[in-house]
Image 1 (cartoon, each protein chain N blue to C red):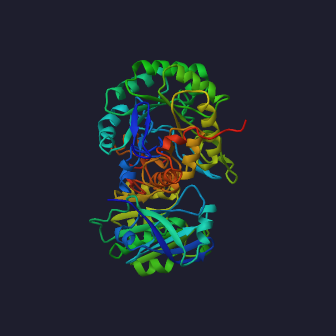
Image 2 (tube, helix red, strand yellow; image 1 turned 45 degrees about the vertical axis):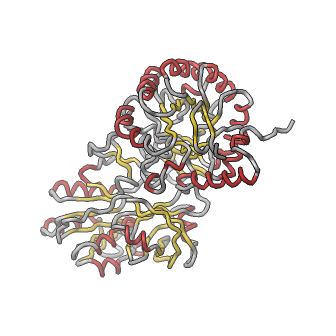
Image 3 (cartoon, rainbow over the protein chains, first blue to last red; image 1 turned 180 degrees about the vertical axis):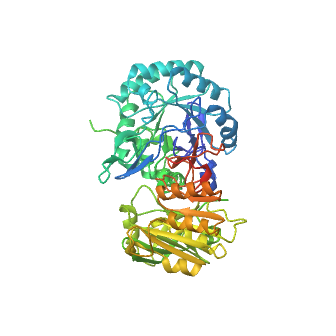
Length: 304
Length: 255
C-alpha cells in the first residue's frame, strides 16, 4: 500500500486529494493542463434529473480570501451526463464521484437510480446547495429532512453513498448523525456558506441572484471546526473540504478528522493546486515517518 | 489544444492614460499559440481569482496586454515592474474567426474593449476601425490603430475629439457607403447590442467579444454564463471563457 492511498466506503483512492464538485466540471478542461488521473478522485459537477440553466450572471464575486458563487446547478441533466461526460471521465484513471442534486426527493432518487446503473464509482448526495430555491439546501438544513432524503436515496442507491452537508445549520453534528443513521457510507463537508456582497456605486448586489455561496480560504477555519466536530460524533469516514488551498491545509483537515480532502476554489487561483497538495502531503508523510497518510485522520489531540 | 500555464517575465508595464496600463510579457510558446480575440488569466498577488485580460498584440515571443485598473487585482498588476514575473494561464477562449474575411471589414472598439481589436486589425487587410471613448483623455491606442488600419474613425461621447456621438453613427454611414462586409466588435454591452442590431438589419455578418465575471477561465466552473441561441449549448448558456469571448452576434441573447 502506497503512502498516500486511502480507502473510503470500500473505494480505493490512490491519494486523498479529490476535486470538489462544481469547480472541476467533468474534468475535461483541467485535463488540458495535466492528466486528471493524477488526482485521487473527481467529484463531478452537480447533476439533476433534467437540464438546468442555472442562475443569471454575474454568478461570481471576489471576497476577502474567497469568492461567492451563484451558479445555481447549471447542468445538462443526468441523461446527457451518462451519455457524454461519464464515459470519458471513467477512462481517466481516477475515482469518479457523481454528485447528485434535486428539488424533490422523487427527482433526486430518479437521478440516483440512473447513476446506480452506470459505472460511476460513488454517489455524492448534495443536500446543501445554497443557490437553488427549492430542495438543495432545504433538505440539508434540518436533521429530519436530511434523514428523510438520505433514507429514500439509500433505498435506490447501489453505489457507495456520500452525503454532502451544509454549514448553514445550527448543529452540523445532529445532521451528520441523522444521515449516518439512515445509511450514508461517508460524509463530505462543508458546502459553501451563504453570503452577499453589494456594489457601493450601484447599490445593487454584485450577484444577480443577490446571495451566493462563500468558499475559499476565508471558510477554511469554519470547515476545520465542523470536520472536527462531526468526526467525534460519527463512525463513517469524512471527506473534508472548504478553503483547502495548500498541502498544509490538507494535512490540517485530515488531523481534524478527514479521511480525504476536496479542493475547489483554490483551483481558480492555481489550477495545479491538487498536484502540489499531493506532492506536499507525500513529503510530509515521509518526513513524519508514517506508513500511510490515514494515520493523520483525527490525530489532532484536542485540549481537555 | 492544450492550455498553458507559464511564469512570464514582464518586459514593460507602463501607464498610457488615466487608469490604463500597457503591459508586455514574455512567453514564446504563448505568443506562438495565441490568436486575436483570445485572453489570458493572470494571477494577481494574494487575490483568489485571476484577472482575465484580452490580448492586444501578439509579438514573436511577447504578448501585449492593455488593461484598465478597476479593482484590487488590476491595481496590484499595475504596480508590477519590468523584470518581475507573472503567472499566466493562456491563451484562452475562442477569438475572432477571420477565415475568408472580406477586405472591407469594420472593427469596432468601445473604451477598454478597444485593445483586442488591435491584433485583429493586424490580422486583416486594410480594415476600417471605429473606436469610441467617453472623452478625449480616455482615448487609447489611437496611433497603433492608425498604423494597422486603412482608416480610423474616433468617436467621443462628449465631442472632445473626432465624431461627437456613438460608434454606431459612423457604422451606419460606412454601411450606407457600401464599405462594410464584416463587423467585429468589442466594448460595453449596450454598444454591442446596437452594433449587432445594425448588422442584423443590414445582413452583415457580425462577431462580438463579450465580458463576464469569471472563475476558472477554462470552462469548468460555469460562472461566466451568457444566454445563447445555438442548440449546441444544452443548458441554453454559453460560457464566455471557453465558448467565447467572441461569439456570432446572431446567436447571442441580449438581456
